[in-house]
Image (spheres, rainbow, N blue to C red):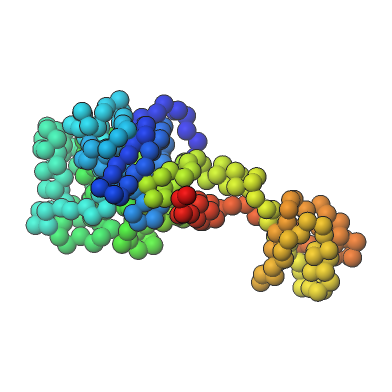
Length: 322
């Protein structure tokens, strides 16, 4: 997803949070651009929620600073809350009130005039797909319905920034797909800046323009998934997939590939070989195979995906510190 705007709306400088001996967030330097969907990726306990709480002004940093839409969350927490919609991991509503009544209560808390609030509620309930359940008690809602009501609740004040903390936990696959489509649409159609915290890799990869990988409170890497993958590709061994048709003699093909200078390892998968080498040996592999009368069905370099990127930086982050 491309971004037309490049103005930073959320930034941190050396943001640190300590709880006695525990460093929850460690010197975080981060910039999130206007209109992008940014993903915080990391295991439980990595510091994602603590970072979000500091951005919202709900907890103060030990050292460092943050700026959200031009406001300091420590000195101007109300100003930050006026422009940020927040969906916590465990969203809660008054169970005896209907979905519409819960939204109305939030609107009153934000000082939104009744007529304006009613227009917004109708539009939001349609947008999140709850128009037919708007007058049902929220306590009867499924997890997915509560999450969608949470989005409507966060948007009732028309924020420019939306922060979502593990928003898809507990949702079934269909609910996850619908929720991600909703978030993608909000970014695309409204230009809302979205910060999404998650430990679920494939969801982050589907929706986010950039990701930041947090491990033990440290930001290990940040950027588009493709860029992070290329960076690892450039500094690592090459991996090449070579697939053959059923007519190819497997032993002879393996012998030809193992004979290439620079090949470190060769693994036979279901319908292809995975060749790990010192560099890109595609040309040499084709030449060697053709010389034996064999033509590969497919031949491609395997680049790092988000899973490999995450594992790489997670391992780097948990190495003993000397």
